[in-house]
Every structure is written in structure tokens, then in C-alpha cells.
Length: 504
Image (cartoon, rainbow, N blue to C red; front, top):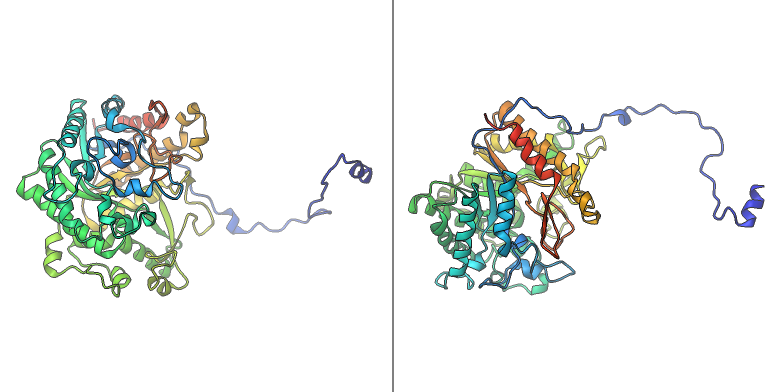
């Protein structure tokens, strides 16, 4: 009958499995019985956040403002990179430049205490360099933005550079070679340091009386491109730090925020894995934090990367003394974690800048030694990893001994852009992410004695993620045709978790 059924066409493409008789069972390997990481669904309700905990949300000008050619603003590397290679551009994005009052009102209605945003250099100084005209319209705009934040009972946190470096600093590169980050940030340019300090002084002097938290450069360790760029950033930052505290007697805090996804050893008992983690930390953090926070020179692994490049990246004893101690807090963008192990040939990577693992020259994975994923996966690189997050807070505090502001943390739900609006708004995975990270912060504060200032969730609205609108990190959704915003479940859960555990 089976042959007849096949021949008649009723069972097209009929096939058999790989077995045709009963199979005897084999022992279950113990390696398959290792428990997976636990889901973070239960949280401590006996711990409370400090009275002055800085609960906030964040955005950046290049990702939310739009209006890139309006009221004097001139091009940055973001517009160039977003216009080539099939990337989506940031010309319009959320139109926050004109909708900031409504956006601020929506944040205040949710009860957040801080709004973190950036002020673009090429709006304040359209011609960029010292001695060129200051754009009064731009100063007036951010005057009103900051005053609006204060009127709604919140406090502003201002970043001076969030990767939107004016395009003139990349005049040595063809436009088609400009990308997001790396060499395309322009920090290597000889004119950058003096020009950035000039811009920073203008902004700080104008707004210092109302802004309590300053970030000079966002995530320089991920975007400096070269060791020369890193040195330029440190020297510029130190000048602005001293200007703020010594010259204009600013009463707030000045820091840098670092992009750092915690590196956990594949096997904590394996010395090679531990050494790979140390290298990962030195390249990610030590290259800037050692001089600024510890008054120490670069880690050996950083020097080895750049020693034969001809770059002027070394700090003289006078320069090291000048930059040391010029951070009031550590800004810490801690989205996820990575499992670290050494490459088979680390030295070959170190000596080859075109190597796919350069400059870290370690293996990064999203699975532990038992094969389990490190956490629940997002639509991009973040995983929900609250235990690793707590470990990272401990590492940064115990190593550098400065108060920590978690300046960015966020989670783009898997394929959220493909969902109907009502399903986008019911974003349970993002809620678990934020609640578990807040809980990890409470545990680090109370059980580990880590000094944590607060958290600024990324982002307050779905926005342009460096060439892409499909990565939805927002606590609000947005209709990019009408620009209407919609609160997501995670926004309520983020604020509610804090309220239930706020200092009484």
C-alpha cells in the first residue's frame, strides 16, 4: 500500500528517518545535566535605594534630535556614515529637537529624576574651531531645554560628545570610508584637543549653574580608533575637569562614561582564561582609567599594541601627573557580558591590526563552559546577565575606587520591530532585564559595599541606533510618521521597581 500511495502522488517526497529498529538507551552524560543559569524572576524586597539615587533615562542628540541642517547645525561623522552603504540616516529620526518639551513632560509624568542628553558641538559652533562664531540660537535652545527639565522637577545630565564629532576632523578620509566609531571619530586629529576644549568651556560656562552631572566624552574606549586619539581625549578631559572645578567653581560632577561589557573567564580555575580576562580589562578600561583614576601609566598590553606605530601616544611624567585624579565618578555603560578565553595565537593578533580579534586579541563568547547561553538574548548583542552585571560593578569599584554611575544600560527585545504596536508595548523581556539589573545594583550596594550613584536607562524612546531603526532599545515606542510616542510596560516596571524600594 505504501508503494501504491507513493506512486499515486498522495505521499510526495516521502522519506524515512535514520532509524528502522528500536534503539537501546545510552547513559546520560553528566555534562548534559548541568543546570542552566537561573532566570531572574524573584527580587529582594527588603533592600532600598539610597536617598539620592539618580534614577534617570538617556538619549543622545545624534540619535533623537533630527533637524541636522536646521538653525545652524553643520555635519558630523554620523550623517556621513549614515548616508552610505545602505545604512539608515539620522536626518529626521525622533525630531526631539522640536519635540523636546513634550518628551520632557512625558518623562516627568513617569517620575524619573534625571534626563541625560548630549549637546552637539556643531550646533554650538557651526564652524567648529576656536575663534569662530558661537551660535546663539543653539545656546538659547539648550537654555530652554535645561530650564524645561528643571521646571518639571528633574535634573539634567549633559554629555559633550556622543560620537557626533564634526566632520572636518576626518578631512583626511574619503567619505565612503567613514564608519560609525573607530578611526572615524576624528579623535586622532591634531586640532581636535584644543578645539574640543574650547567647545566644552563654552558649554560648561554657560550651563554650569544648572547642570549637576557632566560627561566629557561618551565611550571613548570603544571609539577612539588610535592610541593617539586616546591620549588626546585624556588631555582634553583633564583640561575641562580643571576648568570646571578650578576656573568656574562648578559644584557638580565631571566624568567620562565607558562602554564596558563585563569579561568573565570561561573557566575561573584556568590561568590562561584569567590572563585573557586581564588583557580584556586592560584594553577596554586600563588604557584610559589607569592614568585618569590611578595615576598609573598604560597597561603593558596597551603599549604593546601601539609601540611600533609611530604614534605620539605615550604620556610624559608631567602629562600623567596632569590627568591623574580628574574624574569625580565613573560613567559605566554595562549592557551585557562576554565569556573570555585566549586565542590560539595571541601574539599573531597583537602584531596584526587587520586581525578580526584586534585590539582585544581574546575570544569573546556568549556561552559558558557548559554550553549554556549567558542569559536571555536580545535582538542585538545584549543578554540579560544580572549576576555578571553585579560582578562588573564590584570589579570597577574595587579596582578604581570611584563612585559609579550606570550611565547606559538597555535591551532591544527580539524582533520587536516586526511586532504590532500592542505587542511592542507589552515588552516583558525588557522589564525583566531592567528589574534584574536594578536588583543587582541593590545587592552590590548593600552586600558588596559598592558606591553606586544611580542608573540612566537607554533609551527613553526607540531611536536611531547608528544606521539602524530596527534595534528598539526604548522605554517608549514611536511612530516615525506621526512622531507619536507610546509608553511601554518596561517603563512602568522600571520606575515602579525603584519606587517600591526607594529610601523612606
